[in-house]
Image (cartoon, rainbow, N blue to C red):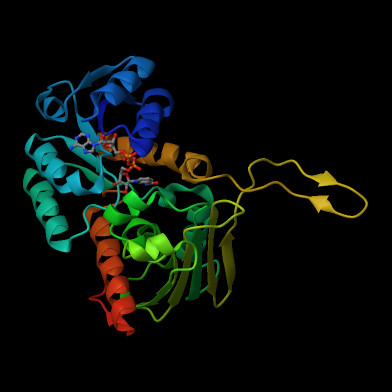
Length: 332
Ligand SMILES: NC(=O)c1ccc[n+]([C@@H]2O[C@H](COP(=O)([O-])OP(=O)(O)OC[C@H]3O[C@@H](n4cnc5c(N)ncnc54)[C@H](O)[C@@H]3O)[C@@H](O)[C@H]2O)c1
């Protein structure tokens, strides 16, 4: 039984705590912590576990693993502390907005030799994974093209945009990871275009809300990613890989399976609203993978290098928008 504590019980940490407590075999949620003590108390009460300060989690002998689900700017410091304390670590994406800091945290993990996994949950979505499996098994031959569409239902608050690191570090970061995951070949070049088409306040905050990114992979394949901060019809998440012998697609699921047939039309259902609804299965599978990895060993399902590569690609995309030129990267 792996004893896990969750640090940071905001949007994502609360959900992770619930999944660990209720839906993860061979795991036990033992404590939650947050600088917002009321939030920690409330979740601890609901899940009938201890609440503590984050520092108390590091020194607790009954905790084997820590899930770092706090705001991005705290990840590096908490990874270093958890590693020094000898805890297995799960850390939400992005590890940091700064590559040097990512390296600093990974050095601490290496020095302590503790299990470490990054929260790129979409790898554990059954549909997206089936696309990767089709590539790995050569069912679609050699990969030529990948297309990833990732559009949020509505933009986050402007205050969040200001500290998010921008659309590429906050949102496209998942798509950079997905491109590496499904194509299975490192990225060598990034070319990005961006615009402010949804809300001028996003532009005033120094960000863009609509983007197209093309990636060149080492094996010659190309990926096209398109992003919008606002799709009025819901959370649009599609992944497609086209190869010499076929194509694999992970399409949008509907909010449920019902449809209504009349004389003039067939009425489908809308999309799940956002990530907590759309990616529930991925989060459950992600926790199963983490627990299996920590208890039984083997390579990390999402390693430190998998955490670092999308940060490099996000910074390259920013640079590409700024200069209007493609940016070469060192095979990440
Ligand atoms: N994988 C995913 O699908 C996904 C989705 C959303 C967010 N995230 C990532 O998860 C992280 C958290 O995002 P969120 O949307 O839950 O944010 P949030 O603001 O809702 O929650 C963050 C929580 O961390 C707490 N916190 C901040 N600093 C702390 C500290 N030093 N010690 C203890 N607690 C602290 C805050 O009080 C808050 O409760 C971010 O890095 C984000 O990029 C991942």
